[in-house]
Structure formats: structure tokens, C-alpha cells
Length: 261
Image 1 (cartoon, one colour):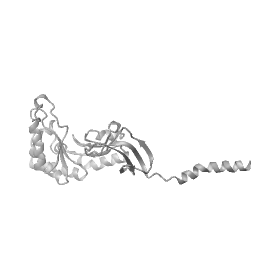
Image 2: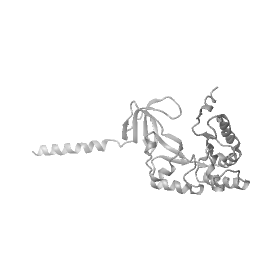
Image 3: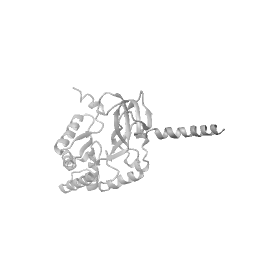
Image 4: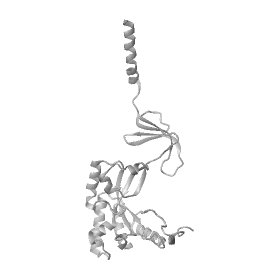
């Protein structure tokens, strides 16, 4: 009877001894055997992806274990997509889950095509609100050149005076200093449509001081499509900034075929 008790006691210790001899996981997550895309246009490769402390630390054949192991055989593994024309700045304040983005693989959003959900001076407070509340995506914003115009001279038509244009430039500088990625325009809609190429070049030069860029919903997506593209390029060249064109397309029949040789 005594021998049986000793044997049972020894057997009960076996799981503890095995656990003590098992090395701790080297990574937080290891995604195994997926079709890995690097985000740079290269063909997929079969590989493992190891993640530790929120960062990808190894891609290839990963020998070490992860605290969580994911079998990705037959599935694609890629970096998160970036939505460069996000419209959810105000929505995220109410609900930071952003499930509509995450379920499509979007992990980073850049808001502000029509203007950020905050004035230039209030961008840090907006960021702080989102940070304290918690959101499930990486978030950044542009600053709208139209927002600067409306703040200085309202939303009516008309050309700004030199003093007004200078005041708009100050708003752009404040926004850039507060973390905006660059300036935007939506020239197909008023009051943005009231801004001239020259006005936008002036404001782009301010953004360029902070290595910002110019992103635009062009002035025309129909008959004047080519001229609208040329305007965007001109603003970039004269303003000293890189250019992004939101949803480049020929939206209406008069523009169809204009970009084809």
C-alpha cells in the first residue's frame, strides 16, 4: 500500500517536472506556414512570422515557440493595409473598435480628406482623446487647406487677400507642427473649389517646411481630367511636396480613355 502511494505521488509530480523543463515561449505569436506577402509587390513566399512585443521580429523558418501559435497554411499573411482616405475621425471618438476596417485587413487609417475632426490647434487634444479612449487601428490625419480657408474667410467664393493667405499659412504651420501629415484639398466641391492653384502652391510650401505632402480630390474627373492631374503635379512641383491623388479615376464618360495611349 505504501509503495502504491509513493508511486502515485511521483506520478502526480511528473507534469510539474515536465513543465519546469519546457523552455518559455520565445515569441508572443508565431504564424506558421502562411503565404507571406511583404507589402512591396514581391511574390508570396511560404514562411513563418514571429511577433514579440507588438512587432514582427522574424520572417522565415521560426524554430522557437510562440505563446500563441497560428496555423496559416493555405492562407495569405500580409502587413495591414493603410486607408489613405479615411473618413472615420469623428466616428472613432464614439467607437474605437473600427471593426469595419479590421475585418478588411486595414490596420492604419489617415483621416482628413475633407478636413480633420479638429482645428489645427486642437489636433493634439484630438489625438490624446483617441489615445486615452483606446482605438484598434493606427491613426493619423492630414489638415485640409479648405479648413484653413474657411477659418480665415468663411465658406464663400472670392480670392483671399495677401494677409488672409498668410493667415491660412499660419494655420497650416500649426497643424503640421501638431502632427498632420500634410495638406489636402477636395477641389471638386465648394468651398474647396474656390481655391486657386496659386493659393494651394503657397500653402503647400508651408507644409513642405515640415516634410509634409499634398493630397487631393482633383478638380475634375471628367472632360478636364488631364488638366486636373497637371494641376496636382504643378502644386507638388512648385510647392516642393510629394503628391497623392485620392481615387484617381475617370468618373464620367467625357473622361473615359483620356489616360490611355
